[in-house]
Image (cartoon, rainbow, N blue to C red; front, side, top):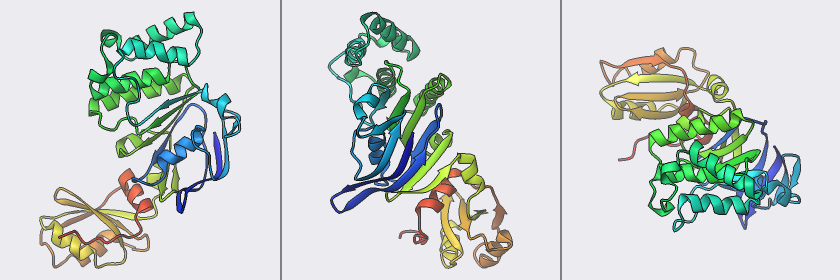
Length: 309
C-alpha cells in the first residue's frame, strides 16, 4: 500500500494534509494521534470509502478511487462503533455477511463454522448481538470482517470501550492473522497498543509528524528525558515551566517525567540546579524515552507547562 501527498479538505478545514507513506505486507501498521488529527479520514481514503481532494493511493496493486470496487472485496473493515445488526443473532449476522461477501454456498458454511470456533463464538451463536458485552461484540465484529479472508484488514479504533483482557485477546488474534499473511492497518488512542505495531505513524493536525518502528522512534527521540522524584510535584513543575529548555512535563504519582532539549550537557545536574530551592529530598535521574514521550514531542509545540489552577 502506498499513499503520495494524500490530502482531504472539508470546506475550509484540511483534515489530512499531504500524507505520504508506504505499508509493507503482513505487518501491523498503526495510526496514533489526538482527536481530530485525521486518523479516521486517512483510513477511509486508504480503503476507498472517501475520495481524496489531492494525492494518489495504491492498495493491493489497485489505484484508488478509480479501482475502488476491485479493492473492496479484498479488504475487511471494522468500524469504531459496532455496526452489525443488533436484532440478529451471532449466527444470523455471520451468515448474512457471508452472503454479502458473495462466498460460494459450501464455503459460506465452512467460513461461518470456522469463525465461530476461531473467535470463541460457538456458545453465543444464538444470542442477539445487541445483548452482548463489549468484548463479545468486538470478537463478532472481527469475525465478520475476516469471513472472506481479506488481504488487508482495516480497523478504526477497534478496542475503544473494551476491557484490558479483551484487548489483549484481540491483539493475539490480530497477530495470528498477520502470521497468515494479512496486512493490518489500524488507528488507536492507546499507547500500549501503538507500541505493539510493527510500524507507527503519528498524525497531528492532519500531518504526518513521526513514522517508524516504535523502538526506533523511542531511540531517536530529539530530546533528553529525566525523572524527578519529589514530594512537592506542583512546586517543582511550576519551577520547570520557567525554563525554555523544558519541552514538557508529565506527572506520574509523586514522580515527574520531563523532556529537555538535547543541547543540555548534563541534564541531571542542570535540573538539580534549577530545583535546588524546591525540595530537599528531590531525586533526579536520566531515564529512557517511552512512547508517550515520543507522542508528546511530536504533537505538542511547547504548550504551557504550568498546571491549571
